[in-house]
Image 1 (cartoon, one colour):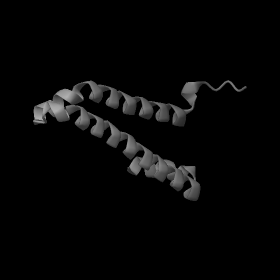
Image 2 (tube, rainbow, N blue to C red; image 1 turned 120 degrees about the horizontal axis):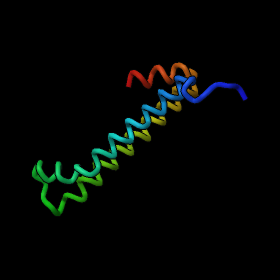
Image 3 (cartoon, rainbow, N blue to C red; image 1 turned 180 degrees about the vertical axis):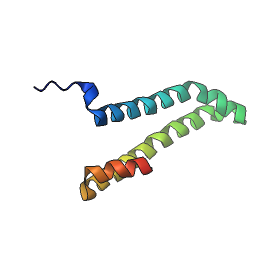
Length: 88
């Protein structure tokens, strides 16, 4: 093994930080989402469905972007895939 540490691999650190920020954002949003939807004026009977719809839309959008990134990576290579992810 080389004497390289985790912090010397800047790409890995950047990807881990991006994942951390993304998950923190969803973690901060989930607890306040019901109150926000209620403040907008949604009836209590529809509140659960609206919260589920928002969280499901996030998951579907993430899957679609991952598929697009996989396709870009397969056709253009990983460097182009990383560059295109910055654009999105």
